[in-house]
Amino acid sequence: MHVVVNAATSADGKLSSRRREQVVISGEDDFARVDRLRADSDAVMVGVGTVLADDPHLVLDDEAYRTDRRENNRPENPARVVADSRARTPLDARILDDEARTYLLVSEAAPRDRLDDLRAHGATIVVAGEDRVDLPAAFDTLEAESVDRLMVEGGGELIFSLFEATLVDELSVYVGSKIIGGRDAPTLADGEGFVETFPELALESVERVDDGVLLRYSVS
Ligand SMILES: NC(=O)C1=CN([C@@H]2O[C@H](COP(=O)(O)OP(=O)(O)OC[C@H]3O[C@@H](n4cnc5c(N)ncnc54)[C@H](OP(=O)(O)O)[C@@H]3O)[C@@H](O)[C@H]2O)C=CC1
Ligand SMILES: Nc1nc(O)c(N)c(N[C@@H]2O[C@H](COP(=O)(O)O)[C@@H](O)[C@H]2O)n1
Image 1 (cartoon, rainbow, N blue to C red):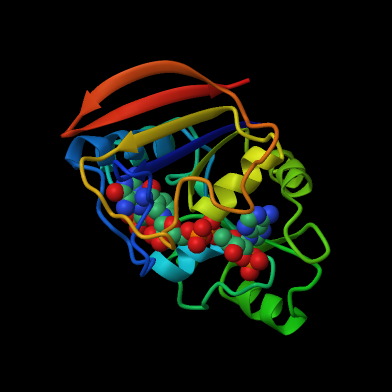
Image 2 (cartoon, rainbow, N blue to C red):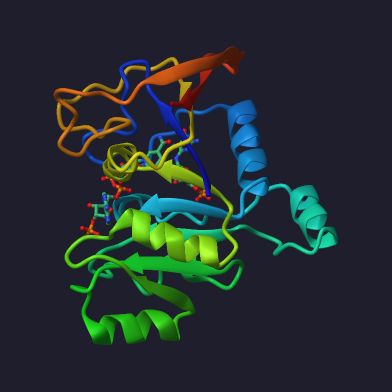
């Protein structure tokens, strides 16, 4: 599976504020680029922290992309994937509507009655890991479901884990021209952080987009 991480940060590397409410960092052109990336993907993934904070929808905005996918015998929208060890996704979350298939990656610690409720609300449950989602194992299952290209939108906890598990092939970061600050505000890669060996990136391109800059890296 090819895994592309895409996120927008402030100039000081934050994904949002210490309140963990969504902050609009991208401009119009960058959001259009993100829509294109989604359209080129088989699935779009976030962590449950992002679901709880933002209630994202994760579907395509541009009708032309939906039409194009339909004409190529692909689902109108990419599937949605949430890493959610304990099945905390709210039953009324927008990612559970019927506009796309939704995979919830959970651990064995997720309460069974909760999983039944989520299934009844349309989720496809993938169990991987004892206490926390075992990402490599869950990705094997997604691959078996024909998810060959996965786009990850965040947040910082999930992105760190993906780098830790060496699952990332590409990283795109849109750096917007604002400062958010805050020692407790989420950054591109949170988790425990790396201390001795650090994932190395190869800078592939730098482009001005809106009033920010788009950095594209491949991951060795
Ligand atoms: N600017 C941008 O581009 C974006 C910004 N954001 C912002 O990021 C913030 C949310 O980020 P964050 O709080 O880090 O949440 P994440 O979306 O990264 O979700 C983290 C949660 O995912 C669950 N999870 C399950 N398995 C794993 C695993 N193996 N590794 C890591 N996490 C796992 C954990 O909860 P559990 O243990 O219960 O399963 C964990 O707490 C919000 O403020 C949002 O607005 C989000 C996306 C994009
Ligand atoms: N690319 C990007 N730029 C920003 O400025 C952002 N705030 C985000 N946030 C993420 O976008 C997703 C929302 O998706 P929907 O529009 O609801 O489909 C969600 O993952 C946000 O955290 N992204």
